[in-house]
Amino acid sequence: MTPETTTASTGGIRILLADDQALVRGALATLLGLEDDLDVIAQVGRGDEVLPAAEQHRPDIALLDVEMPGVDGLTAAAQLRRALPDVRIVIVTTFGRAGYLSRALAAGVAGYVVKDTPASELADVVRRVMKGETVIDAALATDALTAGPSPLTPRETEVLAAARDGGTISDVARALHLSEGTTRNHLSSAMQKLEARTRADAARIAQERGWLL
Image (cartoon, rainbow, N blue to C red; front, side):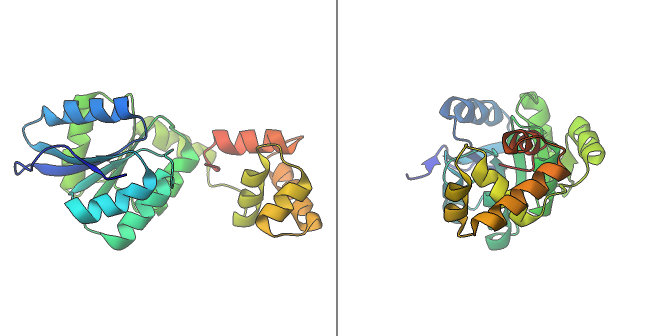
């Protein structure tokens, strides 16, 4: 899908919008476009379209959702930071989860706000980030400090994510090219760390805390 070019640049802060919900994306573009100093130059609906669109349009700031097809917004943020480090990134998401915030900061984002942020405040976030500030939703920052980092290893996270849709141990092991015994061990360890009785419960806890996408 070709990224949608919204307007010609008028000299304001150049913004790339990425959100898989067309109505949300369009509303954000309209509201931000009402600001004299903001210029939405492109919109995409998939995470794997973010980097190509940024390379084509060269925005100053990219506003990214977390859950998108192709790749998630946090993965897209990391890709964008590596390829175009001068582009500042703000995550704008429905999911105010502490684990997502930790991953976003590790990916090098400069801002993280939830979608119910008023348009005027979001515009101010864009301006502050453009000046070099890091802007994080205050309530979410507090939650992140309280929750702490994920206790799961990368492999435990991978196995738990693969198991959350209800496949058998054999299915998960085959998908990840692991033995069934190793798969069971990783799931058991994850359940113990999360104090969960079942792997479904462990996956739910990890999802709610933002440790799984």
